[in-house]
Length: 427
Ligand SMILES: Nc1nc2c(ncn2[C@@H]2O[C@H](COP(=O)(O)OP(=O)(O)OP(=O)(O)O)[C@@H](O)[C@H]2O)c(=O)[nH]1
Ligand SMILES: [Mg+2]
Image 1 (cartoon, helix red, strand yellow):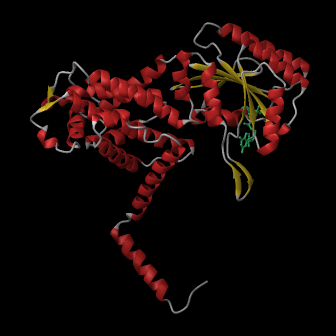
Image 2 (tube, rainbow, N blue to C red):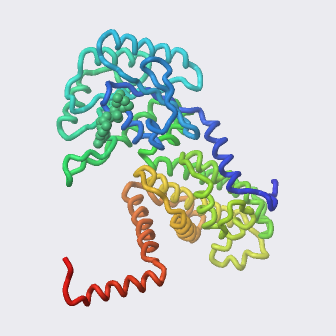
Image 3 (cartoon, rainbow, N blue to C red):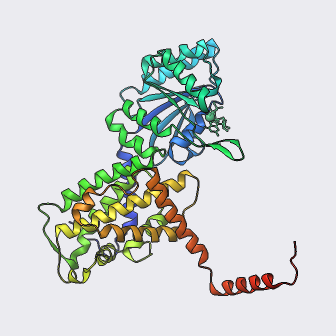
């Protein structure tokens, strides 16, 4: 095992490894079809990370097909444009789709599935559209996505379509983005997790990892996949056959932890910049510098263990190493879940808070023993748990907001006093 020297840049290593891992993943390739204005772009922007329809590179491949990609996200989307349902154009679109499928067959870019979008409140489907759906279904598995689904009419439309026995793989009602009915009545997003589930059934095994990386509609699913891999990694690395190492050699564990964090980041699928990773690592490493010496991180991480004094000067056993590493992995995944949730809502992340969050999660997880760590349910096992964590995070934010420097506090107090004691109130 290579021992990191003082020039070793842990952050850079994590980023490079993550990138390499994502590049290695066989991508998932999905075609999104449907008439103009039904909500294809809105669907793409909400199901997948980083508002792909707006921020991805869109290249026209044929008159009616646009290929959308973005570096670092292992997905290729094809978006149909100007799909009118006059017979002539329909034939042309079909031809283009057919050619594309044929061209990409047996390659990394073979198309795996089609989302055929119909606006749910249109409540009717034209014969030409039925023809088109049938033709596409002959060459690819199709999910009929009923967009902008509102209430009973949408359910009825969905039942109506199901009863038509179209040769499609599934029908799914969705609301991709919250829909404002009035100022105080908003229909929240729904149906996207089910769409993820149904899509996963249709795509080949080797592309499921890429799909999970690229999606953002089901964050628990991302976290669970990362968690599963991490527990296996820790068990095989620090299990039977791990020779205890002297504490002074703790830096030997750095490459493993780099691999761990990079692989988790790749499985989870999240774009982290340097400063974000620095903040997360700094939380357990006790230093905020970008070029971080791995040894400091690991040695510091061990200091969080209750009774670490007894370790110093002693040895690190497989058990100890596995507890620290599992806690690191678990906390990292929990923090990524929060970053992803925030990102999905288009909110920004405060790095200082992130650091505190990572530290508090890490300390909490370190208190668990090995069997607890292995069997512990994921912290954010469902939406409710995630929301809980999210509000803890928001509380932290409030705390910070209240942490106003003293002179400001004083002037606020004076202002308040003056206001409260004014002989008359200004309206
Ligand atoms: N609130 C809400 N609005 C939606 C939703 N889906 C579509 N819309 C609205 O419908 C409009 C059209 O949606 P787009 O996603 O641009 O439709 P498109 O299918 O990509 O249209 P073209 O690119 O022209 O083919 C958008 O401006 C949205 O405001 C949704 O799930 N929720
Ligand atoms: Mg569009």
